Structure formats: structure tokens, C-alpha cells
Length: 153
Image 1: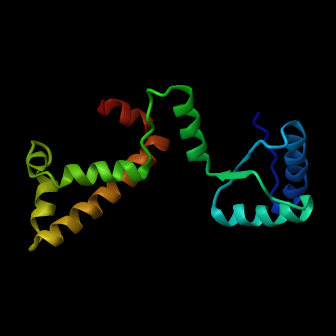
Image 2: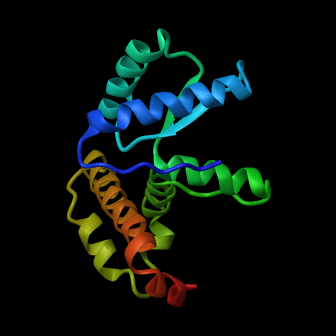
Image 3: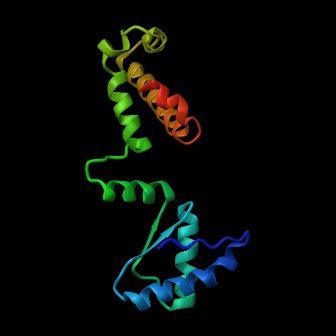
């Protein structure tokens, strides 16, 4: 079950969270409690505060929202594989390293950018930098420009 508690002060959230963790443990003492956090520093903070309140901070799984949603989707349908930013960047890098692909119509500017390299190592670096930037943009488009992505299909 998903439970959301909001506050602009993190300390105010610790006690309701501790109560929710206690309730989850009462229902399933060996079960893992999943907590969605924005970053590792919040996870570490909560780990310490929950240990203070509960005496132990075991069987807690801290995850980010994007990872949690990815896991939910893939668990619901094993035929679906959500491509995260890291995987997308690797796929793009592999494609950008393929000279046959970058010579296709419409990719002349990409080819010119890569051709400015004077060594193979510099070309690889340019391809990697471009793949990283494109991966970030595609991920952002997934959040903010879905209609544009649909039009590319």
C-alpha cells in the first residue's frame, strides 16, 4: 500500500514514518519496508532517525521514485523492459560509434561533429559526450515532452 505524508520540515516526517514502519513490521515482522526517497542523503538521514526511534533500522529498502516505478512496471509484465537513462546512454553510444548509422540522411550534423576529432580516442570521447547529452534529453522528454516522443515513433 502506498502512503504519502507531506511536510516542509523533514523532522516532522520522521515520527509518522516510524509509526508506519512499526505497523508494517507488526503485520509482517520479516518483510522488507520500501521507502521512496529523493536522494541518498535523505535515505541516510532516515536510516539514523528510524534507528533512534525504533531501536533498529533493518529490513528497510530505500529507492528512488523512478527506480520504484520501473520495478513496478517490469514486475507487472515481464515482457516489458523499462530503459533507464544509463542503459539509453549506452545504446546511443553504441549507435554513434557505428559509422554506417551516422552517415544516414538527417544525421549529417552528427557526422560533422564526430569528424572534427583528430584521433580515434577523441572521436570516442565526442561520441560518448553526445550519447550522454542525448540520453539526458530523451529522459527529460519522457517527463515533459511526451507528445514529441510519440510523434517520433
